[in-house]
Length: 121
Image (cartoon, rainbow, N blue to C red; front, side, top):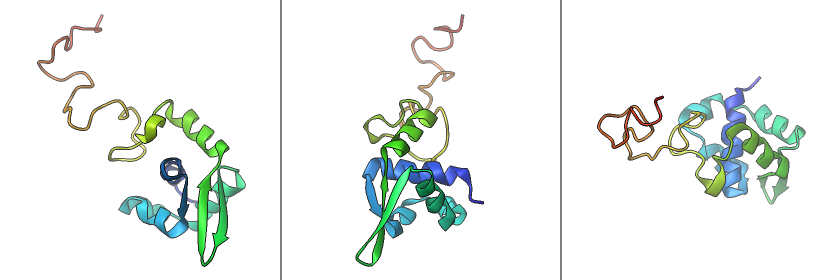
């Protein structure tokens, strides 16, 4: 059995690029995701109808389906809009709205106007 987080990582990459050679797709995974990746993951995604794989020349091409897009929307809310799915760590829920350079703009930070008192009641 493969790590289910790999399913999400693969679908996120395909949602952004729409279609990729299998080797490029695997190369886009983080080092940890590559260690956890198993070929069965793609087979299962294809069996579930979330991706389509076909051979073109000597390389297997992988594409996301409408069902794959819908799966991502269900599991990420509206985080997929505009392709801004992950900024760093895949699979970290709640990190979507934060700006990478904000350094605490998501609340609880010190000194921002409307900080802890706004919306705390």
